[in-house]
Image (cartoon, rainbow, N blue to C red; front, top):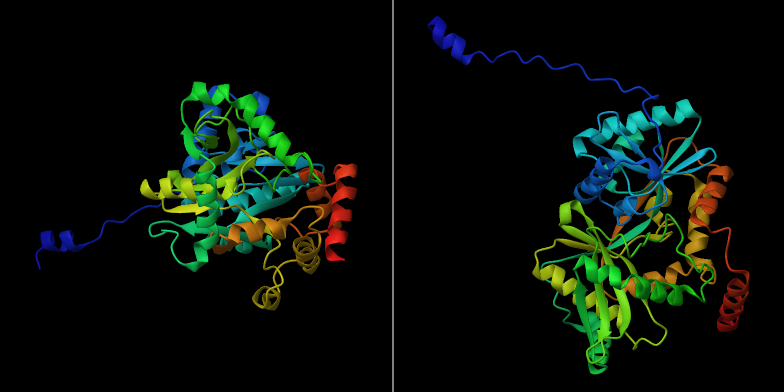
Length: 386
């Protein structure tokens, strides 16, 4: 073999660049009021491209602080509470960067004396957290509609068809409001509907970390669909969808209706919007997290993973506390659409404790129910059981 042929067959030596070590001190939390226009544009771009959870896009309107990675290619939303940082929506960054970001966040938390709690982590993303020493807890399930062949036929969709039929007979139609001027003009009415829908509940305001943040004046890339009367255009309900995975998936995150809305208004919105997204080639629709469901399943208990107290409390919340926050009722409604239940996890940078749980309740707003509504709803719940 000639020297030239030998040279051609020899693979060139590739010298890998040494990994840049991020310092734990390179982690300034930025209050939302201090964000520059460029940073706000980055939030929108990262949330749209890299969001995997329904609440990922909330980073644009949440009252949280934000934390950019030192490389500037990733960001997380942080709700600080004393010794805890609550991080909804996951890590908004390219997949190849996530293991490094997970390790860096652990160092940041340890250096600052903070416990980091990450929410709605997918099974595909849990591995790096385990490897970095996080405590992994099963949080619940995310009901998902895989689009492409949904036609609402068969006995399993009879209820959805019945609600749709009733709404159409009531002269309801679903329209998308895409013009920014029109959406701003409807902001007051949207908030009126949201307030009316929550008025009699134990928590008359959305719970942070568990329910989507909704600002009708700042929808950005969210899509807004309204159910209205065909004749007088009176609005009876609305559905705001948040983008995920570069627009290939959408989350039905905020949906509300008037007390006077025709029966089936929300199922009608769900079906009509699902059909439109499916016709556009969207791959998936998320019906948003159901916390506590499945935490005591045999496989989760047998795994021995996570904190047993967290598992028990989530299970009690899901099964026994409908008068406070009716998770089981919400799940019953979502199951009418025959979704697939995808598991979701929380990842805690240190061990969970009673202080972590108290911080969670404080941050969500669960410690501040409406006393009148709580007593009324507990009484109704006991009356139904009796």
